[in-house]
Length: 289
Length: 289
Image (cartoon, rainbow over all chains, first blue to last red; front, side, top):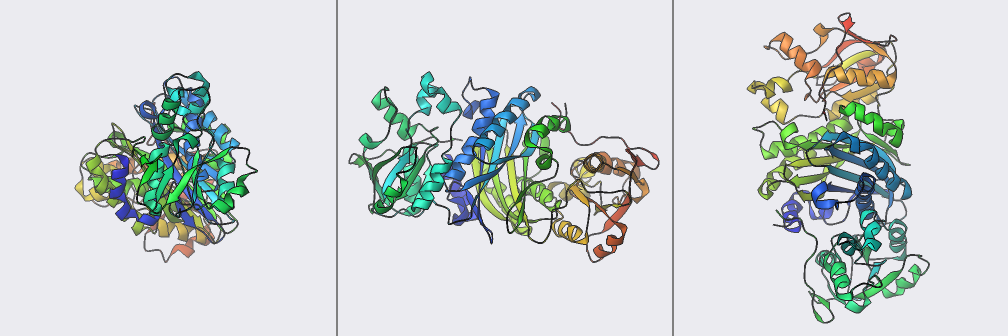
């Protein structure tokens, strides 16, 4: 089983309503809270060569990226750390704190534990006071399919292209972009940390739609092998960009963003996802048991 | 180093204000949120013989107990699960859901991961809309020192006294009690999951006070070896009862609680903690590195 199959065990227990997005949602009288939790392990999630500071940074960034994907403002992060070596704590905490500060959240403590393999779980809470979160359900036929930034950077970094090492180890969640995209009237959004292809399938499932995308529209880094870069963007994971869906009439509202935003295709009513006219492989970053 | 020593590395980074209580605190215009995160591992935290359902229950209960210790109402729990075996997931999730439901919280999904040792991190959010959370700082000389329930039940359960097996494996966080204690005007509170003695030292540190307690006042289970039971209560951990501090004039407001509440001593201005006139050993459940 992979983790998306296992999710099917959880859905009936915790309800579709709360298990289908990057974050859990909690309605309060004055605000909507979104909460995300992410577990990371040294061997499977932190590339060899990362510093402990970067490990702390990344642990927070993955969670803040999920908050950004709802169009919310990060407010608070708590971190549970299972430490294999006490002398790693200070740098991990400094990296975590730096990431919180950069994106406007308070690092508010957490839990400490001893563990044979370094294990970090960061849980972040974001807030929306001027609207509704953007969910995975909501995309409708005709919507533009868009992404922020340049995809396919993390995997080349992992494979030794040092130009992308920082992209891999110090991901920059798209917080301002997520809020702007929500305010512009996006209909659905998620981050593509597991890869673009599987994220398209996730949105298609939740929204009950199909999609057509063009490979030549996907924004890739310059001076890289195009085929490898495309493969990394589609199936590799590790790029903390946003995938979002927006009516064409609203797209112009995003023109003031400093981060590039690229339209890569359009939502359809057909129950399939096609790239350049052929079915897109449903493959991404999975945990397997 | 133990975990309280390691906390001293984190305090300067995340600030005394956010690292000194059972929960992190976030102020919103209409409510105060409290958030707690707890990491549990199979070998160190789940006694052999527990069912997976009980593992799910306990993972949530420890977090809800922290929320109860602030006098807040649990609203939402997210859980990150590092699974060693996919077939354990369904029962773990059912136990977690049962505990959420019993104490009024929504189980709102989380994260799934593969891991060599079962590792669960539950993060819970509680809310207060009619007052301030009860913190660890706030106890003043003259306050009564009180506990809920009967202490020293979990350790005998762990050592084979089957009368206490359920107390150990299915702890019942004191949610209604915590709210009532807050409304009655308690000055400080925490749960005693690491043992009574170390909890007294935690409050003394945060509040800048001393304490006198009497061993004969500590509520212990009937028909047990008194010395062993007292040792379990003071230094053993695993009892999810509340330790709280309250001005004598407010104690009467708790008389309608169905759970017994016992006064075991009084706060002093001396910088020490004494039991029966002698210094109390500063010992509890620690993680050691």
